[in-house]
Image (cartoon, rainbow over all chains, first blue to last red; front, side, top):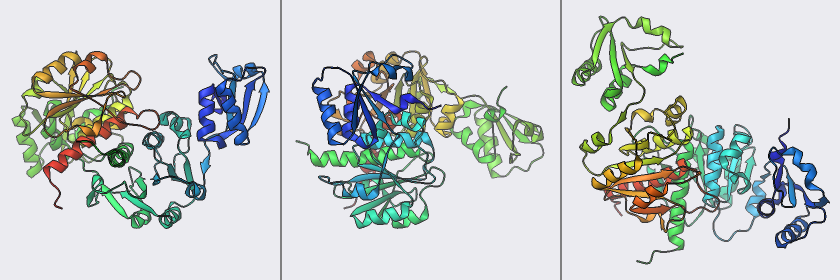
Length: 255
Length: 255
């Protein structure tokens, strides 16, 4: 009952992209026997060697049975594992020019919201999403579909304890921003441009757990005239307010 | 096969609320025979008379069969029709202190997105949503559920021609803002505070149709690092940027 389509990525650009963004997800690369190596295939070859990924020259025809339509493989297929999570320590060790920005999901269990937030976070160019091992929606086909492929473009940090991981983040100079309806400050009243930060979003029903709220350096609210926002809309509003501030700072308006 | 639960609203506050917000949806109000009229029932009685809605004194017990759980009717039930649309002319004739702000959906056919945008638009305190008769998701149970009740808190203007209705809006001093990936201006570079405006969102696949783009006074983009935003996330980002600007203008920061 395995869905093979989900386990293969084909075409020169898609394979190249996953080699660049998330090579750890690739198990093996298959290249059409006897094919002419154009620049993109050469690049795939190079990146595979660099990432110590095995390349097998073979007849790609045999993969056709795994697909419903007749795909044009363009001579290259990557066999990939399901989304790979990275360790918090590895994420913190990654070098980056400038500040790191992540989103933490505290028990967001609805797959539509999870997928939507992954998509928005990747679109805004944030660096990672952190979720708890327990009580988070598993990355199902729905999550992948709603994320619109973004799941491969942003690392997911999975942790056994959000609370302990937040302590580690704070030791590494991250500021923790929690959303809460009762907060005093509006979400646009803090300066997102000059710090590493972790934005915590809670589940719609329960909000953010008390333990985590207590660790927050800032709590912010989004004013509403009727009820509250959906958690993925709320995430979009705050994430893009941060991005707006960053864009304006990086490229001052010439007036 | 009718779902009766969807056709009745009960309880003093919910009935009072729909009487205030959307009396046109109410067909009839049933009040428990012999009940003592407290202040809220008196108010319901008054509002019903004001809106020429029939009141029937009866034994509410008979309605119990329509509900799965045993609801506490609090002595009052309103029989409601499905969401009522308002005419553009009626919307334009409504008096309002200050500017009117609406969202126009051009062929947004996904019910999740439709419901989510209704919820965000109502939460931001906008005045209406305009959709086309054709090619819009019908207001199904999914739309109502995702909107989280917001559907009763914001008027829906349904029109046979978005294009013609936009012309009418423009004659009534509305500025039309369209979202387009290729736009020159960022969505946060226009001033939303000093005009009536209609924000047009297009479908994810096709974007906004050319005819409507040509009528736009502004086109704006949202920058993304990876792909585009989901249409409901994009709507949330722009709607709340407008709200942010309005909030700041209305209540200047004391520095």
